[in-house]
Length: 351
Image (tube, rainbow, N blue to C red):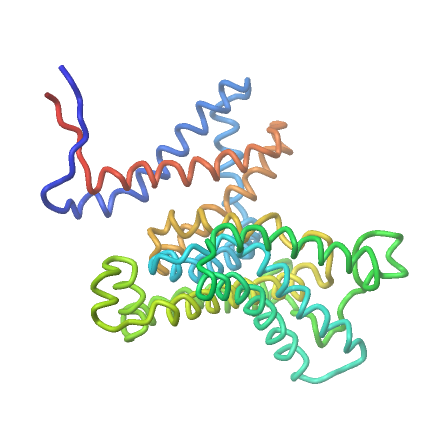
């Protein structure tokens, strides 16, 4: 008996629907097995990781708070991925958005009025777009691989932020910590409800994927993006300009990443610190593929990946699970959907 993998002769829509929940189930099972191999009680650890954060209002609030930026960044990246443009540098674009918007906030310490927050957010959006324009320019003018250029620029952005918060923007009253002064009240988003940290920025982040879904489904631009990724030859034959699409998806994705960065700075953090997020720009890649590159599918995927952050902290406190376990679970969340996705178009044949 010999096994071989062959392409399916016709689509299997049922498998396409079942992939996300099966991938989640496989992740939970594999995580439980891993916890057991590490010597932790499986049932108690799985409960602490996947269930306990959902048993309180505060837990749900933190879940939405972390899912918001992941969803917005992932939805922006998904546009590029679907068109064949691989922006892997969202973490750097997020960082530069925080730097640009934070710089405006620090330059207006005594300003008041409703115009301050839109100006700060606009600066964050433009900061992310400017950083994303670099790999877009290098690809369209020099043919450079955008995966490498966008990724390398991430570390440059991190060094720029570090140089600022350790240097000229360092808070003189901050006990020598690498952080800026706190932003003014006009440049800080306040929580929408007591005991929760959700802000208006979180609501905006959750609405952006819906807007991008409408763009993809009901606009000529969305049709061009889908065609460029699914049938590049047909897109060229139809007269779609590749350079224009590269710029478009890069500016949208990097702009949203930059906006997410400044919303984190003016929201839950309230200042610039050496590390704005725990790698949301990289984690958003997992979210995008777990959501099948569909902006609406990205919303529940973001909640699930956000749960891995909160569950990792909960399990660390309750059972002593290493902090790196959250990263392992996130890796499994990427592995299983990708593996299962392969079998949508292929099947195992016994010879």
